[in-house]
Image 1 (cartoon, rainbow, N blue to C red):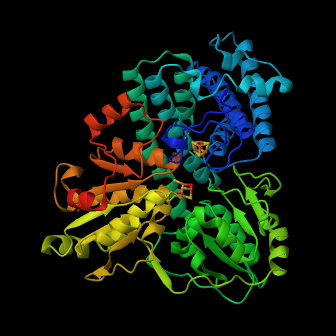
Image 2 (cartoon, rainbow, N blue to C red):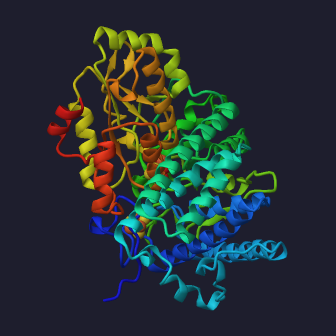
Length: 548
Ligand code: FSO
Ligand code: SF4
């Protein structure tokens, strides 16, 4: 039987190879086709925009906005809505044509690739999608390297968009994304050149994470040690998930004094660590766990849910909460209301608030507190304490366990690994991977908690800053001489840019699990093993011996 789609971009790719009939994530083949076509258009826009830039022409910022939003909407679990994806396709073709006109007027020759030339019209979209997906590159290793770049760019686009929404932009990041897409489309790059492009992607990845860190901290203050309530109040609430701090700011302002409380879910938990949000007494706590527990947790929450980014789990057909689900930004789900922003970038949540008022208060599923807020500024304030603990031997090892959580049973490994770590080891975490061990009561070492949560997956940057500062404090030559090992869990493409950023920073011997990416061909895995010492995970016992 002919495959109706091919996607291997996330950790849950079917059979560790790729999804061919329907995504394990719930993505239909029609959505997969819309995504393939959207990426085709994004490449076309990028080829023309990059060519114009290379000839000295300025490219309007609307092109950057289109490229970042389109890439972001193709990330795993971001957008399941064919209509919204195809609207982006149409918009992309219109932008590409405008850019082509500029080239024509100025006698600039454009590369004669299909991405620039194809003009089939809407009726042939679905047919065209069949030939422009991942498998268009026949060589398995070149495909692997190209996709590694593209997945890194998707993660980069996500972080770039968050920063841009707070008014922080870096032309170099936008130009790089488009130039990388131009290179993989037009030039027949060989493996060595593609490896160099992968590393460059990691370098720009560090830049974009630093930019987002600056944006978040300049806007909302430096995250500080915070105890977050995981119980509930007796008032109705709105649950906000995803990563976008600008959105939660709007929501907190608009819900103030309405009698409706606000709770975070999944990756939004670290919003509680920012000083700017602590002033809201109706910002009650965090409800539930990582993204994949949505079906149970959204049911018991009782109130409306706002998605600012991925990860969306498609609700079951009989789910009680579908009508209370709202998407925004790059996310989308058929039948869910999409909240758009006004010209000043603000969103109007009045409809969400009115629905919340009519809902019951959330059902309590847990009680107590979790602690977090250990981003670089806070940890560096504790630097003397940390350095003393290392020198005295009270802390023998740091284990970076950042990344993503997911629904696979094999991820129980991470809870078991955390539990099995010797008492003199401290976990440094960021991203939704933390939900595997942040409620385990692992205790502290001389007052330093044994799980230090820096924040969201993008705050993995904070962990890199902490490592650099420790390297200075201990006067070491190389970051790899530190007593830090890396046992990272990945799921989607933001984890790919985090990984490439760490490789660029020279971090070696990263253990990556629960499985290695399906998109890495055996030859590419070999390059990563030989040059960076990347390895998979084995058993908890064996890995504790190696890493702790
Ligand atoms: Fe998780 Fe989803 Fe942050 Fe990802 S909620 S999995 S890497 O989107 O973004 O860690
Ligand atoms: Fe499969 Fe992951 Fe692609 Fe979804 S995003 S279709 S689960 S590989």
